[in-house]
Structures are given as C-alpha cells and as structure tokens.
Image (cartoon, rainbow, N blue to C red; front, side):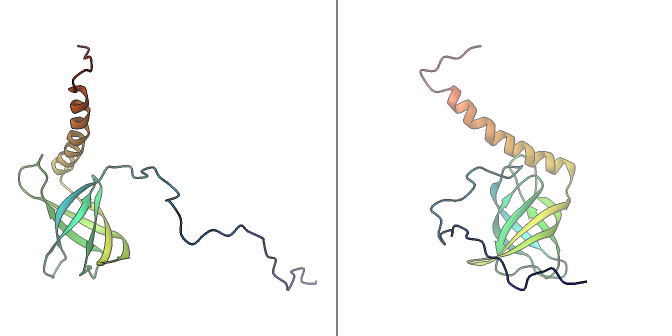
Length: 145
C-alpha cells in the first residue's frame, strides 16, 4: 500500500492580524460572579502568612503576590462588612500567571462556612442595590408607589 500523504505542506493565505490591537476582542464581562477588591491574608501550611490586595468573588479570589505558594492549597483570611469577624477559607490554586510585580494566582474556595458565603453574596447584592436606589432618588424623576 502506498502512502497518500504529500511531502509538501499546504499553506493558506490568511489575513495577517496586527500585533497590537486597538481594543479587546470581547468587551463584555464574562465572569459569572461580580468581583470586589479586598485585602487578603494568604497563608500556606508551614509557612509565614503574607498580605496582599486581591479580587474576591463568591466562589474564590485572585491576587498578585511576590512569594507564590509552593503547593496548591492555601488559607485565606479576610473581612467583609456584612459578616462579624474575619472569614477564614480554604482554597486551591487553579491558575498561576506571571504578572508585572509577581505571580497572579486564581484560587477557588474548597471549604467556606455557609454563613460566610451568604455574607459575601449579601455584600455583592448590597453594592448592586445602592446604585439603583440612588438613581431612583434623583430629583425630577417621578416615583410610583
């Protein structure tokens, strides 16, 4: 039986894409959950804790650190206004990317108290309700009660 594959590669005349784009390809928000900036205390088993700023969502967080964890599991400690005391959550690292000032990590919560999760969700809901109430209070708008 003979080999029917050609030894020459086919080339396609594709339209070249410029190296720099004027804008992002997708302008809409693709995340399921909103994000809020928050101070996080990141702890790794057997190592010293470190503080950094990050983005919090209901299901996880992302942050940039100069000392990334060696393993995949971390403990996060943070506070939200709708919960009394600090929230401690176990998380697993799902993504690591290089950033200008360190390593950008994305983590997903693996062990979070249900009351803490509800407090985080309420904090996000309160933030969405406030702009709607402010728009309704603007003078000149008729309110229907």
